[in-house]
Length: 306
Ligand code: NAD
Image 1 (tube, rainbow, N blue to C red):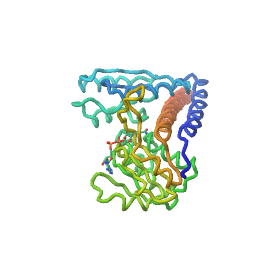
Image 2 (image 1 turned 90 degrees about the vertical axis):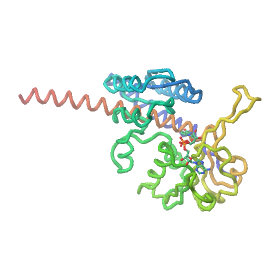
Image 3 (image 1 turned 45 degrees about the horizontal axis):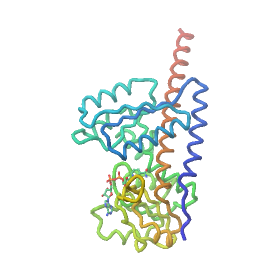
Image 4 (image 1 turned 120 degrees about the vertical axis):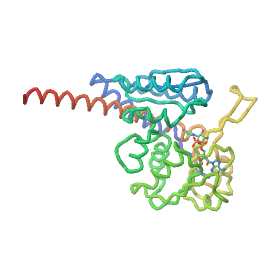
């Protein structure tokens, strides 16, 4: 029977770190602030945004929400982002995806100042991730990495199979897991993969990020593997209060009998995503405060030497 990975417990530790660093910044007169831009009324987006804002408040950080109608013009949305880029009291900018149809996601993501790109989606952030430069890492893949580390799941030389090749989960995960310090051998499966079970059954670590409930059956899992379920699917459940229940991509019960570790949904990767966002926001605020201090120091030095 698999050990259940408690993402909530690991996330609590990370959130505590974010809170400590926030308090240190506040002592310097800086309160980390995230601007959340939300266009439209997608119910899942609304609940994700609410969870992020609650977590920020819990760590002592500020958030400012900018709600725009689903029919907002792209130019107006870009205007909001430009104003936030220029606002020194805003340290991070999060544009909640998906954007309404008619708005170009790439254009909007590229408009965010990379210094405030706490989602890690800007092409500059992605480039730095690939090249190992300084920049923000995307929250969900980074959260998965931290979960593996905190659980002591060996990655050095491990075979990892990822199901899903999106820009926000699958691709960055493949990149991060193949870094030298993680040292896994990664296979990325997607809708074009023939017979994915051939690969998944070889995996020491299997990561499902396809958004397909029930995709990973016990027959696709190697005995003792670590199974990380990133998927979040809303399944109709008329008997429940909300009318739906959340399910991952993994057939949880049977897979838990066979795997060595497993993440539940909810309570696995989801809380880590939010916790890593908090760390990115506090990092952005620290960077801004350090740059401002260095600027002030440089100005003072210039005055002295003049
Ligand atoms: P996406 O729709 O952008 O990408 C899904 C990917 O899965 C695609 O690359 C597609 O090729 C691949 N895919 C689809 N069917 C497949 C199959 N049968 N076999 C192999 N690959 C297949 O989705 P996304 O944004 O990457 O999100 C994936 C899932 O993760 C969703 O359920 C989403 O809700 C969830 N998610 C969770 C978190 C979290 O914090 N827990 C964060 C982001 C996304």
